[in-house]
Length: 290
Image 1 (spheres, rainbow, N blue to C red):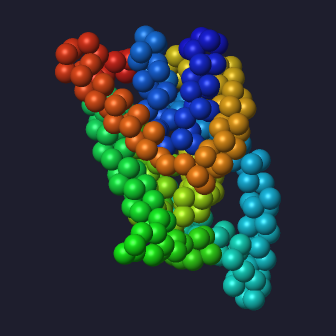
Image 2: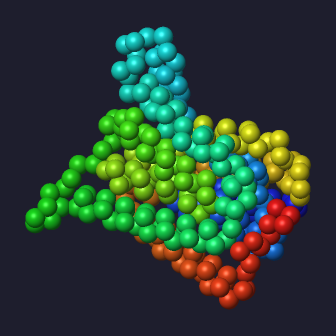
Image 3: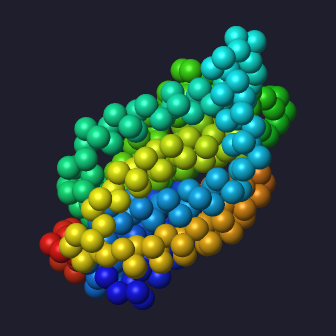
């Protein structure tokens, strides 16, 4: 991998990680359309550490408060009723599904799941799911002559059951094209949470999963065409760009619809099917050395 490739892929990772369009799919597709080798699951997981560092800084006050309350809850029964302490435990609970499935499906994640036909399917299907969830949420938030505004849930109402459902939604993102934020936000909206609450928990929930995955994949750097230098550059670029994107996205979701992302996902998925169906693009493009 050249330095230029790593810079572009780091830029793509930073731009797409927090948007509900799937960063792993876009890294794969960027390499395909540029004629590069597939950067692979290991490169993807490690560069996500950069964007996750942006989450740690952006939510630093929340994270510090949650960690402090969680540690106190280990030794104080009274502290366990604190909402922040409960959030700490719920992040752990919500991380169980992706931890179990990530280890169980490791070979599929680095192999069959990177098939462009599967990516096209997940882009379209999860785009439609996001669209339905977004429309239902908008409908409940808007009053009409025959319908009052329905109050949506905040993170103070999050419990173990919903935490696990969020976690299962996050685990779906092991398949490129699903999108970690897209799946968890869709799940949150369908469970009745506000856009801001679903997005905030989605980003907090990703921290242990992404850091653990990235650390686990460090051993594979240097194998194949991906080396340490370009990987570090891509990770740094992803951090810088990712921080700007997360700040913008958290403001965007408070007033805007997800429909632009829905349209983009469906259009991209259809375009992939057309390219593959006309033999313009191989579903395994770039995989041989990736």
